[in-house]
Amino acid sequence: MEGVKYMEGDKYLNLIENPQFRDELSHFKDYLTVLNRAYNTCTWYLHDSVLFLNYLEKEYGLTDLEKVGREHLRDFLAHEIARGISRTSLVRRVSGIKSFFRFLMRQGKVKGGSIINVRTPKKERRLPKVTSQVQMLALLTASLPESKLGKRNRAIIAFLYGTGARVSELIGLNRGDVDFKTGLVKLKGKGNKIRIVPAGDYALERMEEWIMVRDQLSEAVFTSLSGRRLSARHIRNIINAALRQACMNAHLSPHMLRHSFATHLLENGVDVRIVQELLGHVSLSTTQVYTHVSRERLKALYQKYHPHA
Image (cartoon, rainbow, N blue to C red; front, side, top):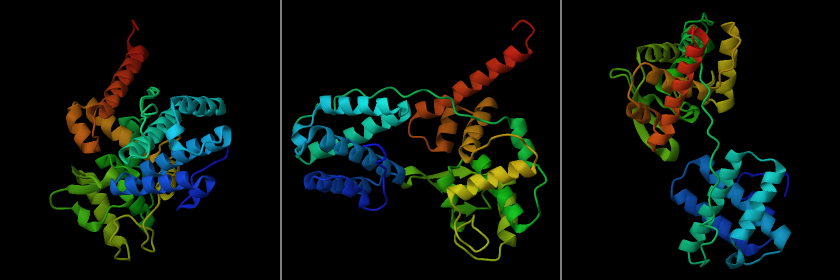
């Protein structure tokens, strides 16, 4: 079991010996594709279902999905906990496996729903890490190189912080998605859901500076000098390089820019439902975590500066 990892394409099916299990996993994969689930969701749901079925084969010698019950899932989760996986991964395991068995029930492949009724562990509530408004201003106004790459990198940082976009949304951004007259940007989020957000004058000006100096006419907005779309790793490296050039001894991931975008809006009085729309969150509870961040920051400032604290 240890060391089993998701592999691209259909190779992961080779981890499963039972042909029925392999067939149902393949159908499940097609089902997730039809539902237009996000790539990462499909990947991890399949990965976790493979882990579970692999465990059933090796530990129980099961060959019939109809005989799989909640006790098997509980044993599997206990095994995973013993391996030291995080609570976040454990929650995702349960979600993926239950999704797989719901699919089997809809297809009439299994009758019992005991696995579906297994209670999902509660997620650890971690407050998102953010940087301060002062640090963000320092980074945005830092003297970066005036080369083509310098202009591109400045535009990337300004865009991420100015729109709250995910890295995947920045990478997939096309020229036609940006309206420089209205200042609105079309972002394609999880599950290919589209939302329209304002970018702000500063981010738009930096993007125009980059577009004017690049040599190639790629459809993508943010590219390498050869015109290829950037990867998530490229974006992380760009931000790290900008921090070094600005002489800032701080950690700042691309997603922290999104967290900071949301937190700074709330700190300046923007309604949480507006922030929800800007971030593209389906559930308001997902956005409300940033209100906790704001309160924690206020408490920390109070403890630091109030004489009676």
